[in-house]
Amino acid sequence: MMVSVVTGATGCLGLSLTQRLVANGHEVIALGRNEQLGKMITQAGARFIAVDLHEKERLKKIARDAQTIFHCAALSSPWGRYKDFYNANVLGTQHIIEATPPNTRLIHVSSPSIYFNFTEQHNIKEDAVLPIKPANYYVKTKLLAESLIDKAHHERGLNVITIRPRAIFGPHDRAILPRILQNEKNGVLAIIGTGQNIIDITYVENVVESLLLAAQADQQFCGKKYNITNAEPKALITILSELFRTLQKPFKPKFIPYSLAKMYAASLEKLYSLSLTDKEPRLTRYSAAVLCMGQTLNIEAAQKDLCYQPKISINQGIERFAMWYQRT
Image 1 (cartoon, rainbow, N blue to C red):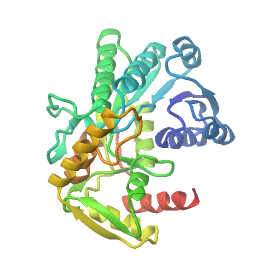
Image 2 (image 1 turned 90 degrees about the horizontal axis):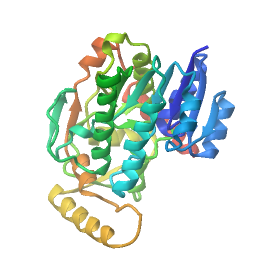
Image 3 (image 1 turned 60 degrees about the vertical axis):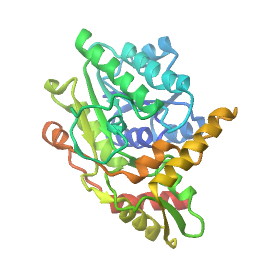
């Protein structure tokens, strides 16, 4: 029986992946910190272990018999302390690398936010020139994690494939669509810019598909990195109106100029960094830019090397998300 280890198993991606691996007959060791979701994972047929990625020796024992390790755990937020991001994303990845046995395939989940340079960017390929200054602490630490992966691959032949999935949404997503819905009042939703910016988003099950394909991919693709999307670039306003229609909510977009949103976000950031709160500002300069700029990725490499093809459309994904969202 195939033994798979999943880190970040209580997050949106890790949870979907764990359920899919169990359904495929794998023995799954699911690592996470949310004990409540851990119970759900145990009921689904996986073995849940509450573990911190800093427990190096424990991780080595857990991963000893694994054929595949899926590293989905990350601290993802547009705001927070550098130390927290560094501990989760850099040290966490280092400890997973150290715990990976010699013949085990490691699938590392990175992020295409590393490409973001506060301008419109379309059809970005994996080898695009990266901005000199990373957009925020999350991006900076995801880049550092990738460099650790590269180093281990080159120096000791770590059997690894990295994927960079764009804007994952679906059941148990707390980051993308719920954040937008939080800001809606009686159907009125503030939209930065015109809402006509063309973006990629990716339904979680399609990302799971890419992870399973990467796990089975030929040895020649080790060390490579792959962009993953739904391959359906759409205007932000189109996605949002579909979301509100599916949730049977009225949709009244209120457009705010980017220059204004940027100033507002900058003053909020100043205020929050001076105060002693760990709370996230309602808007950050990064979030304002991401919501207003178009960004699409080229996924030809994943299509060619991994035979990746998204199976669930954005609209089908929105329907599945809405069913889950209305239940919670």
